[in-house]
Structure formats: structure tokens, C-alpha cells
Length: 341
Image (cartoon, rainbow, N blue to C red; front, side, top):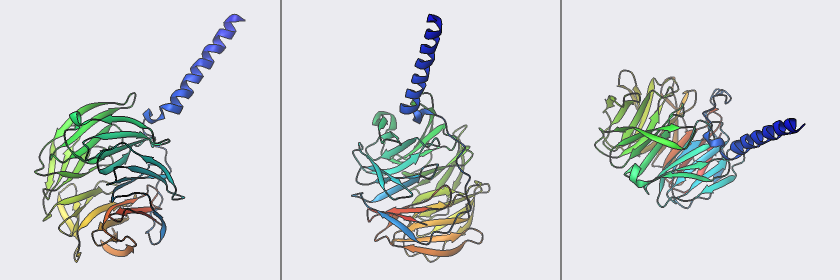
């Protein structure tokens, strides 16, 4: 009888321990690859919500992998988490001491990272907004312009003001990191990063007017794309990683053949700076956010302009499609975020 009681007690203790870990440390779990598959994307045409709350320009937006949450990073030094279906503010994440120019979700849907001009990277638990860890200036070394997780969840990259890119190997078992690469080659600040969907290479956009492609296994520079005439603010990759889109201060966006490094298309007639660019999840559409407060929507079958979204009162710095292709978000200088469908 005593032995049976002891066994039951041990089982109960183990179950309680696992429940505690699940409740408090679920952010350590590996990426989940069972999100609903992307539907055929719909072309955004109507505004659902205008999200108010930021007291500074919104520079970065990211949908969670399951499409339920939207994260926003702002000049007001905060990150906000929003419910996509209702437009409700869920959490305001405070702790940074300078502007936040980039936010990114880990593929496991439970962890959010933010990069700031306070020279730190912070990690947050999505479910309750709790600050989990801060990587300090001594290991970052510069203002953080952009952060990105690899789709397999194993790498975290940061594009820095000091012209370099740092890539860390992220361990799931603990919030530990190992510096894998320090990528050097840009001649000015690195403004945005984008991993390929197979996590094999990284694209970087820089104030030096170039885009660079880096091999993640070796850290070697694969290719430099050089057709822009001014700073490149944004890069995005199509779902098959065959095309790359870039947005520039030269008032154009370009499409590139990734394998050959050739420019396939250059937008014509823009009268304002193009700050942001994003593909829909099925790469059927591409959106650009512009300095004149407009968003242009392009069809990728023939690179034709399909529509324009208007509603912002100033520059559009960030655009993002939801993973299921059913929602679209934009944010900018007017301190607001707009959700479209």
C-alpha cells in the first residue's frame, strides 16, 4: 500500500512539474509546423479597424504565425500586441529606452523579440507580455535596426547601425545563444533582414544602396544586388524564395531573380519614397508602403498595379500580410495601425 501511494505521489509530482513548465516556460518549445495552411490570399480592399495607442510613429509590424496576434514597434519605445479579429489591445510591452524599429515572432508562436536604438534586443512571452530576457549593448554593439528569426526557429539575426549583421544560434532548451556569424560587407547601416523560407540564406537591405545575400551555413556572401540609386529600406522574399522585392529611397521598388541576381522589374512613376514592401503568403500579391501615405497593391502574375489603399495621414513605414492571406496591416508616421481585409 505504501509503495503504491509512493508511486502515485511521484506521478502526481511529475505531472505537476510538466504542467508548471507548460504554463510558465511554453515559450521554450520548438517551432510548431501545424498552423492551418495558407489560403488563397485576398486583395485587401476595405479597412476593418484603425488601432490607436502608440504615441510615436509605427515602424514595424509582425503577424504571429497562427495569425491571431499583431505586434507593433514604435518610436514611443513600446511594443504593442493586438488581437487581429477584434482590433483589441492585449498588451503594451515596456522596457526599451529608445525607439523600436523591429519586432519579430518566433515560429513557435509563443515568443516575441524586439530590437531598439537603445542597443538592446528584448524577448517577451506573448501570452502575458512578460519580459523574459534582454541582450545588452556589450554583446550587440550598436543601434538595432532590424531583427529576424529563421523559419526553422534556430537562428536570430540582427541588422545594426554599425554596418554589420550578427547571427546567433538560439537554443530551445534555454534562453541561451551562441554567436554564429558576424557578417561584414555593407558600407552603411543595415536596415532590414529577411530569411529564406528554407532558412538557408539571409537577405539584407542597407543604406549603402545594396542588397546582399548571405549563406547561413558558412556566413559567406553569395551575391550583391546593386541597381538601386539610393538607400534600400526593405526586402521581402516570395514563398518559393525565387523572387526578392526591395523598397528604396530612390522612389522605386524592384523585383529580382534571386538565383541569377538580375533585376526583373522596376516600378515607374512613384513620386515618393518607398519605405516598405511585403508579399502575400502565396506570393500572389505584393504591397508597398509609401511616403505619400498610400499603399500600392500589385499583382505578381504580370507585375500590374491592382489597387491603392488610402487612409493614413502620413508616411507608411510598415506593411504586412497575415499568414493565411486574409488580413493586411499597415503602420506609419501618423502613430496608427490599420487592419484591412
